[in-house]
Length: 123
Image (cartoon, rainbow, N blue to C red; front, side, top):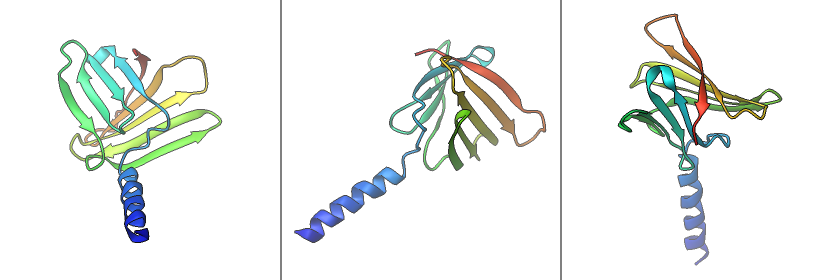
């Protein structure tokens, strides 16, 4: 019986290791320039959709991202990761303020020019 309980606990802990830890950032933010919604969910996924149609463009999750990092310091919380499928690196930062917006930087592999913007909190 003890082995069965230990096995169950190990399985639950292992499953938890594979969900992206979004550092408490949850909700949807809009990038109006690119007709894009970025949804950070409790299940550890980041879903990119078209604002105008709701069409899913890409889901960032375990297995599709590399170098996933969450950093929390006195200036706020940041999330960064690379995605081989999209050939880009992403960074999102929520500063310490009453403002709910996120600073986003997208770094394409094929150019030295990054896309930097503030995405507005939607819901």
